[in-house]
Image 1 (cartoon, helix red, strand yellow):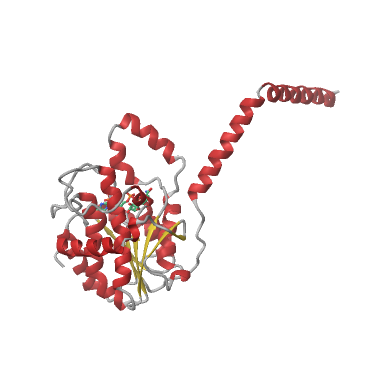
Image 2 (cartoon, rainbow, N blue to C red):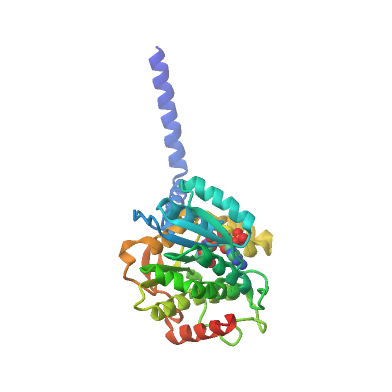
Length: 339
Ligand SMILES: NC(=O)c1ccc[n+]([C@@H]2O[C@H](COP(=O)([O-])OP(=O)(O)OC[C@H]3O[C@@H](n4cnc5c(N)ncnc54)[C@H](OP(=O)(O)O)[C@@H]3O)[C@@H](O)[C@H]2O)c1
């Protein structure tokens, strides 16, 4: 009797489900298809995992902007692999908090912070003097810090902020650390660029340093990221035969604090757009994987001056391969920093 009641209820339930499916066939098909497409996009955006296990015990690594975003995740991973990790951060309180997190999450005690504001050439010089006092070699330099689409601002030295921080600060930093990097050869310099470089054409040398004639926040960012690739290429040819290799990369689209300036304008429109965008982004850890790959992977030991994305070599835009522009940028940068 009891079993019969259960059987009747089950049959009734099955019938209700069948009728619902038959009545809503089109709606359900659309919902499932949309779900599959969204899942596919999310999987695609996340990119491949990096499973390389190489240890880097005893190696010294500097990561600019290592207090948050992909820089912090890179620091955690490289500390786990046995490296001595120094994060270079403009805000020492945020830097110290990040050091506590990186130590806790990596299980390493060999992590420290030194203050570095890339918007000040004086700060870059002070940072490299400190490093020379404590370090005899530098195995891996990761130029990761960046600012995106900020309102028009100038660095302490009068340069437009995105060009000044994303390119010029790192240009001087790298040059002043080159002696220590060469001593550690085979050693690596990793420059974090962006796919955004494809949205610009040739560098605008007339006004690139100050952008006083015309300022577009997004254009200034894309040009600064193009500079990262041209700098990597020129550095590779200048360091040929030294055992120091260079890499530029796009880390993917990642939900980090990088969008802070972009989101702060026209909030009512941009916040919802950002919310939808963030559903399809990589996590900071996933975004750090190409940094880690370029910093440690064995298959790149002999590679130099190339561009990577999703842990694989990719072709950058045509202007990013312009050797003349790379040389011109180097000469201009030397003048601007006084080298
Ligand atoms: N997120 C993405 O979707 C994406 C896509 C392509 C490329 N990238 C590139 O990836 C790199 C890392 O970005 P992220 O996404 O991890 O961004 P993030 O979370 O905003 O981290 C940027 C880091 O740069 C530091 N920084 C900014 N200005 C500085 C200055 N003047 N001196 C020293 N450090 C400074 C920040 O310090 P504070 O914490 O003190 O601000 C922070 O540590 C950038 O080069 C960016 O262009 C990111």
